[in-house]
Length: 397
Image: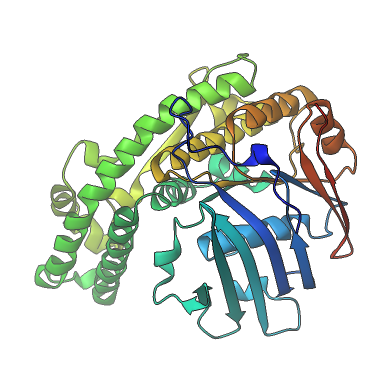
C-alpha cells in the first residue's frame, strides 16, 4: 500500500506545535459486504484527503456512513441496523483498518437481521458497544444536519451527547444510566395511568435520575462554554465575517436540582404518564445577528452555521480526546456557494491535521479546487455501487 504523505502526521518531537501531543488517526482500508447498496467493496486510502465523486444515488454517502459506523457502532442516518443491510439479504459486514498513534486497529462490525450486532476490535468482541466509543472519533457533516435547526430538541441533545461521549466515557455511562432510569420511571407512570403511580414505586427511579442528572448537567455546561467560544471563531472565519452567529443552552437544572424538578412535577407527571422535566429536556438555540436562525436565516446562512457548528465540535473533540478525529464531508456544495466552499477548504487545510473524506456530485469541482490550493488528495469515482477507479495527487512544491 502507498505510504501516507509525510505532511499527514504531525510530529511529536517539537514543543512549539500545540498539536504535537495529539495522536494521529487514519483509516487505511475499508471493506464492505452487503452493506446498504454495496454487494462488496474494498478501498485503500493513502492520502490525508479522500474524495468520493459521482452522481446522486451511486453510494458515496454510504461509504461515509460506513466510516461513521466503525466509529459510533451505528449509522448516522438510520436507527435500525436492519435498514443498513443490502435489500433481500439478511446480513452485512464492515471492516476498517486504522492506524491510531501509529498502532494498527482492525475493527469489524457484523450485522444480522433479528440478531445482536457484533463489534470486534483486533479480533476480540466487545462485551459492551459503549466501550468502543471514543477510540476512533469522527465528525460527519451532511445535508441531513438541517434537522439540527428544524427538528425538536432531541436532535440537538444528541449532538451534545455524541460530542461529549467521544471524549468522556464517564459522561456516556451517566447518560445511559439516566436514560434507563427514565424509561423505567415512565413505564411505572404509564402502567398506573390516571390512577396515579404510588410514590414509593417512583422513589428508586427518582433517586437514580437525580444522581445521574447532576454530572450530565455539569459536563454539558462545560461543553457549551467551549462550544460557544470555538463556534463564534469558526463561523466568523468560514463566513468571511459577514455576520455573527451565536448559541444558547437552555436547561431547567440551571434553576433547580433534578430532585426539586421531580417533586414539583409529580402530579403533572402522573396526569401525563411521563416524566415532564429534567436534563432530557435540555436544548440548544441558534441565532444569527441575535435573531433565531430558524426564522430569519437564508438556506446558505443555515448551512454555513451548521458547518461551523460541526467544525467546532471537531475542535473540541480533538482538544479533549487528544486524537485527530476523522472528518466526513457529505455533498459539500449543497446550499453553499463557491466562495464559502473555498473558505471552508482553506480553513480545513490550515486547521485540520487529520484525515478528511469528501463527497461531491461533480467529478472535477473538488479536485480542481484542491489542486489550486496545492493540497494532496486521493480520488475514488463511484458509479453503480462500484468504486471504479482511484488516483492520487501529490502537489509539487
